[in-house]
Length: 307
Image (cartoon, rainbow, N blue to C red):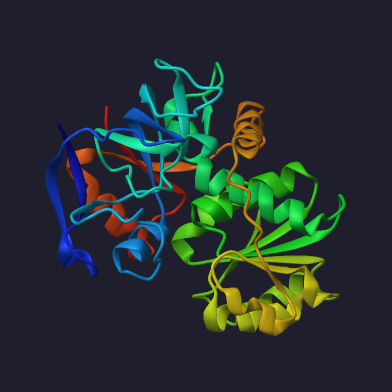
């Protein structure tokens, strides 16, 4: 039995609650872990709202929030290869177990060992933000010296994309609110404050000939405003808005496998993909952790330290 934070039905923050949950029994292809740290992501409140069907594993309410975690393997389901009881691991909760909890199950093919020298706190930020950064930049395949616009640079994914892009010697411009400027500029980003004027005009002044690539993390009207800044519409890659294809761009092709997790972990060890962790909350403060991300007030990555 362990404490968990989740939701009793689909809806807004009002449906969230703490509850006690018996330790799950890992099914085929799952590992049961004692959660050390859970990452907080915008996808978490999207799942709670019922806008991401298929990510609940068919589990009954109440359901636990969270998609990524680091922890210690307690038990293995059938057909789990490459992991052992006692391993320190990080990965995705893709079968509905959630991660804002003392124990949970991760999908074994989407889980990797934490390499020596990498903290559980950093590892817990990599399944979503780290692998997304690797995926979008691999998909764009821009050469050193190319220009990249990161639309919505201030969050966990945006800063990960920016840091990795700068590590690949790209010239990065990022958009965000005033509160996101400090971390973005510290990462080496030329920052465009969308609260200070027309983002499109400001970005075009910085790169008059258009951007070689755009990574969009905002979607909607913001995506439609910045997409024409790309020299080639095919080099607009969106992380959250599938309608990017209507603009000639592409939706991110995600790789959630162990190999990509291991690659992200090595990049973190090398300092190329160093996450900007701006808040560490205890499990008892999970409501505030998710609220900061849901309200758009969080800069960088927010995590919940459980153990």
